Length: 267
Image 1 (cartoon, rainbow, N blue to C red):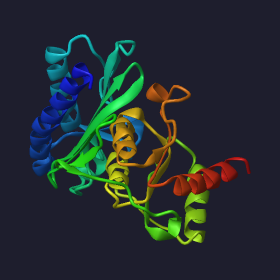
Image 2 (cartoon, one colour; image 1 turned 90 degrees about the vertical axis):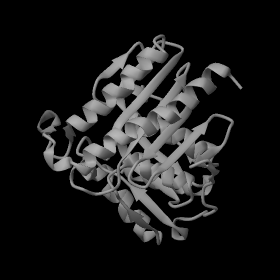
Image 3 (tube, rainbow, N blue to C red; image 1 turned 135 degrees about the vertical axis):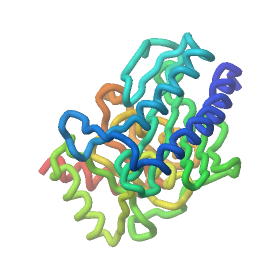
């Protein structure tokens, strides 16, 4: 195992738990937070909690791994051509966080030569740490996890996500067909959490027509190491432009959902 990667992987686990304490304190005192809207979108919010957590992560990485690149939701991209790059969402699920719901988390991924090689996702409210490193398996609080054995949409719950970055017609036909197939769905406001719920066998899949890299990079490797399937998110400059995400428990579920998605795109 590459010692450089393992050192970063171990460091990311301690770091995400450390900043998780800071985020949880903000959450418990959220009524005092000043809330801003990004680009005038009332559904895309940010607070001092997001900015503080990302700054803490970024400062720690600069101190311990100054040669690495960085991509964060709040502060943007730096030195992405470096051998190792960190991709960070300081609080995925900002709206649930601000409204007092408990579906939010902190996500930290590591890329090596533009490939996702490790990810950690921490849910401070439930004290759940999901983690994975390429070739090392996926874990929840140090217990191995595996995707569901389901092979059809009838056999479990789908996670779905949507934002106003894309037109509703990229989403509603897919939802319609999932229901016609006998499936059912949830949406909790955190794409990262719903993806690792796929890894843990709680959901059979997750779909969102467009999502940003900082939300999903860590979750992608966790799903893959748990035995699941994910689309090639990083193609077509997905790291900087985002992409659709489709993470599933099996090839059968992935194939069916890809067919549903693609058939409606061509209509």
